[in-house]
Image (tube, rainbow, N blue to C red; front, side):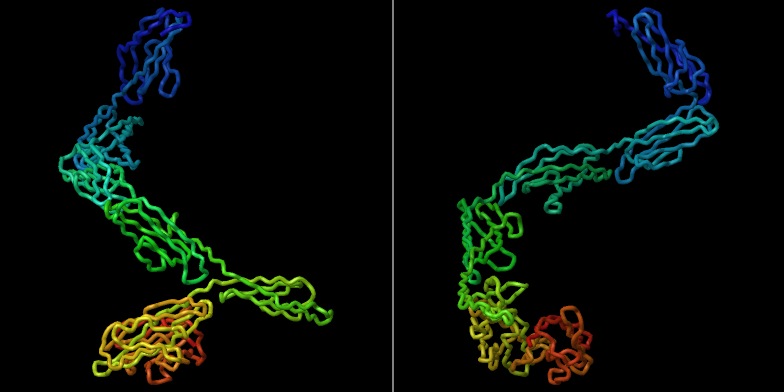
Length: 603
């Protein structure tokens, strides 16, 4: 210690004796101390644990049980010293805690022995989860710290004590070595794990979050790719556990490559976009492409691509490494659309309005887009609008015409379900279906005369397009059973074409077969909804629903040979239903599950 006069001041406070209070409420305790050093002239200030002064004498008397703080000051030198003391009572808590040796079924215990007091006590244990237990002794305890408060009911005082139950079988893990993965083909990453504590008999669970699965059950993790792994160790005897996580570095490199993209400059099919993928290494390489709608060849160069987003996966078979770009991701391969259809507008005639009472001005134009569909929108005085190329009865004023070209799209072929039903004793016959029932064009410029059979049925049946624009497949003289296939092509007036395969189910079993393409105005087999092998006399029911789920037609005992009991495109009220897609449900009536599916109606 030092004072303001730089004189050395060293006070020494020694405890001679503390006399306990006779009870927890008795003020008969005292503290006897000795002080040496300094000038010998001291002042004393004793305060209790609430900060209240209780004495200024050297040895305070008549003290209640509790903690007391002493500050001694040298009156001459100004230096000070301080100490804490406790005056106990006759009431004390003795405890004996046993180790918890099981993590599955905790078995730690605490036994309490009380000394002094009236003998009339209550016990209040506070657990780690703040729950309260009021028994004297505790059992089945897990490893933790527990706080006991004992109250002497007779004398109205309490004391408190903390007790720790320790674990005999705690586990510890340490990472001895982490090996990066340096191979895409044969992963060689790993972790050397050390475990200590417990019984020495352990179970290991290595988990990879990216895979969402456990990848190993051995102590050391071996032959893995880079990534984040977690290890969960269980002591087979005590059930105690240890957990840690580790990152295995990835030092492999994805294949390097270059991309060349050629924009599409055709407004409609055939498109002219192209992508060339050039790997930088020696390979060999494999590639797959995707755009979410087309089946694309697995080649490094693609041509004839429509504008849009494309993705690929490039695999280096030499190293096993992979690089990918998703058409749905943040960095797709994009084919720009550079197509700008040529538009020529010729003004053939402009006649000025020569009448105030009956406007007679005219404008006549000719639009040439090379065959592409287009729309015209005129605006003029007083809210005038028109979509015609020849405007008449015009009043005086300024007229503005806007021509908008729609890129031509190829026809759409939606293959219907075609079924040819027969029995083992009957010969096969022909199948016919109107082309307009399943071929359409988004620009309304379908050229049905272009329809052609590209590949004949594999059954050797003869498929032709009739002058009435029906697909006719002749099976007479053919022995065949199963799913037959052929390919059709259809084009529009601008030469944009589509090819599509069609399936014909040639069935010689007794299954119910639904011919789900209906064209009442055609001359073929699809004038009505044909249902083969549907028994008419056991209470079958047929329902037709529109796209909103409303029943528009239903009948009982459906019969292909009875016009009153078959669907010919009319509603229950006898009204013609609009062209579109409908949904059917057939209750056979013999215990089989209901048959459901879609129905294409072409009026």
